[in-house]
Image (cartoon, rainbow, N blue to C red; front, side):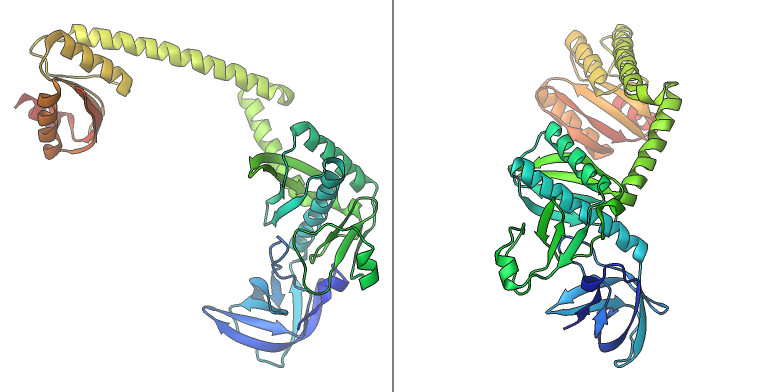
Length: 379
């Protein structure tokens, strides 16, 4: 069994220990110590990383009570090592994990929902609740959660004795074998948890509930706390600054400016489509009974369908419309179905073609030059 220093003090950054096992594991070595401050992956939280001297620790895992540290370099059993965790990363996790406890505890007290899933990765934190919540309810939870941060409440992690445990009403996502470690936030939450947390809620800084989505009769919430929330705000501030500058609008009016721009784009699309319909009309007017095909610039399949269909209905035979540039063209062909299918088979045997169709119309794309297509159609 590895002595878990992080359970006694979550703020230990460096420690000395003795190597008790070193095992080759594919391209890495997994190293066990007599004690460690590295937190192994568990409870929904990613593992600690850091160094043994100059040797990088890439991952930390718990197996049958033994904590293994994964490195690219072996270390001799019996050696003394100086361990140093990436504490900046660890502290970010501590902020977010403690924030999750506050949010889950408040959500349970206010709305009776239970935390049934939790993930804390490098930049993303999610909580799964077993019931749906409205945006208004999430806003209420967020406000109360930040009030708990502002109150700078103590956070206590401890192993209660049997009588204390029986007398304590605590949250737990699963049945726990062995000793139960409780994390208690005064007047807020008591939850079974193995991970490191901050000592006081004020160290969290801020709790921000971001996205949410319904899932399996409940809801998944994305949240960020502390430094994660700061980086998220910086990223969004940079984006909104660029958007407002591009639209010549104040930041607080950016959404309204985007909506107006979207309306203009929709109107422009309608105008463009109307012009393309006129192109289709003019193209058909230039055709006659001897015209087999037309090449038109800048037209999507819908316009090509109109051109080919009108040519066929007016003159019969097999008619085709193409649009694109050398080596890649979109096309639509119309004609009597049997004759069209036979013609299309010949067309596909000559070129690299993607597409098909039935009922007197086929469409798709062809990889060929205009000269090659015209030579085939005129032959």
